[in-house]
Amino acid sequence: MFNMFMSTSCKNPWIPMANLRIQVPVWRILVGLLYLLSLLFLEPKNILAVADDENAATTLAGINKQGDPSVLPPPSTGDYYVGGSDDSSSEMLEQYCNTDLRTFLPPPYGNITGMVCKPIWNTFILRYLQRDDHVMTIILSGVYTSGWVGIGFSKDGMMAGSSSMVGWFNKKGHARIKQYFLQGTRQSQVIPDKGELPLTNVPPVVALYGPMIYIAFQLKFETHLARQPIILAFGARIPKHFHLTHHDDKRTLVFDFSAGSSSVLHVSSSQKKNHGILGIFGWGLILPVGAIIPRYFKHKDPLWYYLHAIIQLIGFIFGLATVLLGIQLYDTLNVKNSNINAHRGVGIFILVLSILQILAFFLRPGKDSKIRRYWNWYHHWFGRLALFFGALNIVLGMQIGYAGNDWKIGYGFLLGIILLAVIVLEALSWKKKSHKLNDPPPTFQMNPIQ
Image (cartoon, rainbow, N blue to C red):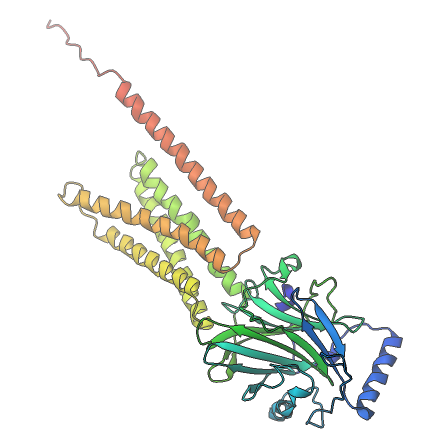
């Protein structure tokens, strides 16, 4: 769901999909009015699609799996809800939780009992059941006119790196349901038939019943799923050749599958971007430059000392801001992820090393002190260790955040320039040392005594 998951502002969070501002020909409006009138006087019919082994979908309109005609009764709820923003809106949506799924969903989705049913956003209703063997059945429904509907599972609440299930009906009325992997924010990075969702052998299903579309699938997790960032989105335009169109609205939630509660997750892309920029400038540029100065410019005494101290202090401030912003992001996400925990742990470790370097400035012994060489050893190697883990954590952060090629190329270019500068300065340093060793010793001439 690439940029489709990048939210557009919406004054009323309960704006239905049918109210989207889209230019439609007059004849389509007339056809739509006739369809709505038919819903008032005719019983709702269902359209069912079951994904086959190749994730393509086969459409069954009023026909069961055996090909026999099936008479489908109307849903148990009499009135269809299409919008609202108060508490009664949620109550009206909850009426759909009484809909008999057996009338239009195949086993096992139609005959599962004890499912939790929660209205979560807009006209979206989430049904789920998590068994003791960590198999979870999920059924997402919402008011549908055209386009696509999807639910994504994210590691950090961001679109990039998430996997999603998306369902829709094409112009011919054929139903489709596929898994997508969101490698990035561009349309070309939304890859169909890929993803990290642990789907079971039970085929996913998409169905249309009355005004509602239903997306049903099963997942098998290694452990019990509790708090999980999910991304809900819809688009009014039908995907072409399985390439999703831009979303019209989306919402990111942290859903607690243990308690059946949800909370809105506010993680802005700018906050995440600022964290990365501060880290690259602090640990990827300023601190390495500050470390180069005392090694290759000590002949500029005492200028090298003041430059080294000032630059490293600025780098420490950047690094501290990076960690504080990272902690804020971590608290906002509040999810368990081994990669995020590793990135966080390495960042705190680097901060501790940086603080020790600041303390070393105040505890610096005199040149003639017996412990001066131990202080030099400690200061040099702790600094090198901090720079190494700083570069490592920048790469790990870009991997976790699914940074685009611009970030990778930019940091790679910056790292290459620094390494090239170190190589050139090191070569010049060795050349200068070798010249000193090869120079003949000075000769002394004694003037004759007059």
